[in-house]
Image 1: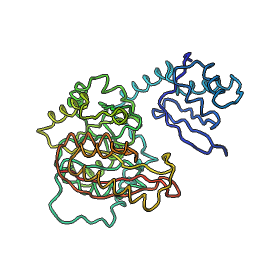
Image 2: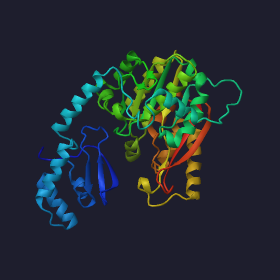
Image 3: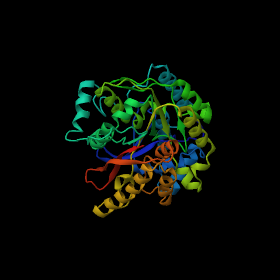
Image 4: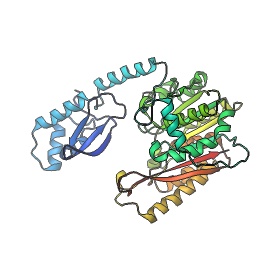
Length: 407
């Protein structure tokens, strides 16, 4: 173990474990099968495991903060468990990550990460499930929609199935016309302003989407090869692109269409712009990426997708209030303003409205939708569906989602 232990970027989830309030330390990269549940009394240790203190200094800081005379051995044992589970930013974790990245890249395609538990892994069962979500949904007999952009949820199908079904059903003609699909997905493990590419084709239970390696290489060159693939392993377990890709493949199969090349792009957080008072319009790397993507696809028939959710609010997400009828209506009003910005292709308005409240509603699709809108430019479109999905058993927390078509 290194002399100044530092935790990797983890998700801390409060849980009940063996009748006790505990913290589950979830590793977004799943570098180890070891699962750690830590008593809440030890939680302050995490704040001090930041790479600036030795184990003895961590012990001293913990005792001073809590007033507890905890044995030093408790700290060393906790750090040993963290190390064994590859949760520390050290040589052990880096070697495991590198080995897993090599394995990921050696596969013929990116395997579906949540097939079998997020949705059926068998084609017949999957098709039956997805068909059930659009039961009773009648599309008006008008000209087929042939626009360029789809905004789709990435919430689980159990909660968001009807919204997925409505928007993807109406996109079938645009899917048929496209010769390339680009999916911008939320990288829930991504860092500030990251754009992460992969050469791996995405598979779904319906088959494998081919990819366009030449375009991926040009995009990687625009932001730097090292930057473009630094977090490539995030693609392995990230669900955001996968959940829209499955619906895309379902529509292709249902309508007897030819398979389409697909470019998967994971996009990290924009929180650093909010914190620093800066703006992505001034970010050289993002601008270069968008310019290359526009230039290289200008003569192609493109369908661009943002696989995103909207607000995440209520006690489940750390808010000190429960969502009541009025608060849900307030969220709906704010979401409507965002959806209007999106259907107009107004990236500046999309960003400005979220920044004005410091992303208080935790818009999960903040960054990828912004990139989609910058890529498409000023346009017009329309709302297909909107919903507020429960995020806790009491319905006091919600995730809002939408389905939009952007021309």
